[in-house]
Image (cartoon, rainbow, N blue to C red; front, side, top):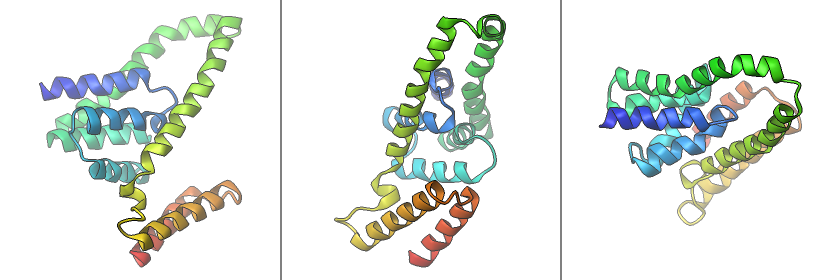
Amino acid sequence: MMWWQLFYSFFKIGLFGFGGGYAMLSMIQGEVVTRHAWLTPQEFTDIIAISQMTPGPIGINSATYIGYTATGSIWGAALATFALVLPSFIVMLILYKFFMRYHDSRPVTDTFAGLRPAVIGLIASAALVLMNTENFGSPGEDFRQFLFSLGIFAAVLTANFFFRVNAILLIILAGIAGFLIY
């Protein structure tokens, strides 16, 4: 039963996860942490951090790590990854001819215009999912850790948004800061 649930959960995420891996994160958390309790919130946060640091799309990396963690098997990793990718593959095969024929038509362009705000909302939802006590601490538990976490967050946000500092460099510097501070 676990294998079917794993396949179905990631197939559903792959089918409705418009906007890429970051937009899928809130859906993935809803399935694997909230609905099925395959992972704790801390384990999910750790898997997201590992998925961000490894090459490849974060959604696929997350599915692979979660499949392995949930089942304890490489087959679970392969199944979750396959299930996440399969809907996109099927939909692209079906829609290819349709889109190429009608991509300039008004209904198609209007549909894509409507999808853009939904994708932004899903990405914002993923950002909010990651703003939790596992990542930032809590002012009630350890005020010093909470302030340092907010400081690192603000510094990385500022460096990336205003100064366009390379994301890889920011990840390395944030890791060093975390190592030195904590």
